Amino acid sequence: MDVGSPALFPSSPHTTTVPVVSEIKFKNTGYSLEGKRLVGPLNVEIETGETVVFLGASGSGKTTTLRLVNGLILPTSGKVEVSGVRTDVVNLVELRRSIGYVIQEVGLLPHMTVAQNTGLVLRLLGRGSEEMARRTGELLQMVHLDADELGNRLPHQLSGGQRQRVGVARALAADPAILLCDEPFGAVDAATRGALQIEFLELTRELRKTVIFVTHDVSEATLLGDRIAVFDEGTIGFIGTRAEFEKSDKSCVTRLRNP
Amino acid sequence: MSDLLSFFAENSSEVLLKIREHLGLVLLSIVIATAIAVPLGVAAAKWSKLRTPVIGTANVVQTIPSLALFGFLIPMPFIGGIGPRTAIIALVLYALLPIVRNTYAGIEAISDGLREAALGMGMTSKQLLWFVELPLALPILLAGIRVAAVTGVGVATIASLIGAGGLGDFIFRGVSTVDSTVILAGALPAAIMALLIDGGLHLVEKRLDWKNK
Image 1 (tube, rainbow over the protein chains, first blue to last red):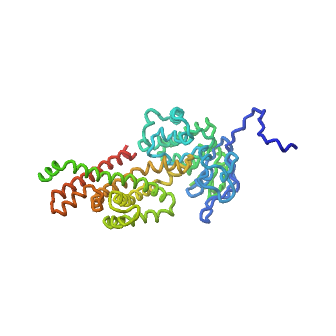
Image 2: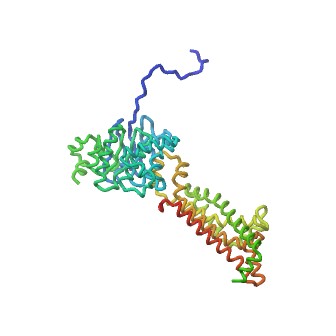
Image 3: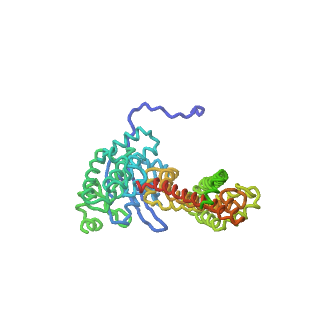
């Protein structure tokens, strides 16, 4: 063996591109705070392009589990893998920039205009102002907002429904493969909520995102989820398709179906 | 009153000089204090261990009577002595507390939810500071600078006693010669200066607050 020659990276003769994986795997994942177990053990895999709804009462561990995905917290036992990479070893800033994150109300920066809020992730990624302006217009149109009319307004000058649309647009800005949504439509009235849900469904189907959607609303869960995971005291008590959810006689499911 | 006007007319160049000196003392000390206090306030907000020592120290400095502080500083090597330099150091020390405290309070007031949203979209802690925390804390921070500047106008009159010049020269000259016209020639411009600084910075504060847009 010729040990003298330097090791080179082989130039590949193949043209097949690496498939874009955006799956999320929880492997024996647990999270404890001050000795108290809040979540886990979780063992679940979310596949590329799938929408999984985390359903459960408040305090059941849905949001904590969501925050484990973009590394806002790290598991205290087991691991979380996002697109094949463990969150406890990855560069968290990069990971978070590759994931869209939509949360209730507070998510928009109050001192920035709608356009600035929408383009913020692109600004963090160091994109040019021309690209940002073009992309911001596209994104606002995607969520049915008039960029000319609303682009220069501040979030507090918008209606609740408009704010949530801006939140979704911002999360989609860098075209992330994964979208995390924490009760994004929780703070708007019922009629607006219904419209937003339908639009969200069309949008995520069209863009083929891997989505985790947290809610405590059963009808929202059955409308949006390819699969529904029912959280019960920090663990997943049930996971299955809409049809399986309707038929299941597990107590954690029947309790939600017939409150 | 007519005495005062004729005093201003007869001594206009000296009055203008004293106003300039006074304003110079206040502005320079506020700029230096801001440059020191804002990073200290940010540090106190970011690292909870620093909170008590930083704000506590600034608090202690604030409780020293201004005349005593000038007294302490005069015998100090390098920073002390007679003249405007010592006065500026004392004014800076006085201005620290309101600015540190308001920078800290402004950053502390930002909700954890907003901070988490910003981190969740991939901000580094430096970007969080520049894009979110400092802009949102700015109106409160400016209110601290305003308090410091207005207090500074008052304290600067006493700086005349250690040879720093300013409008205090008229006040103390008037006191020693029992001439109320000369006292007023220093006191009135100082009061107007304090009111103008207060009003001006208040306007800036309001303009920079997103809630008013």
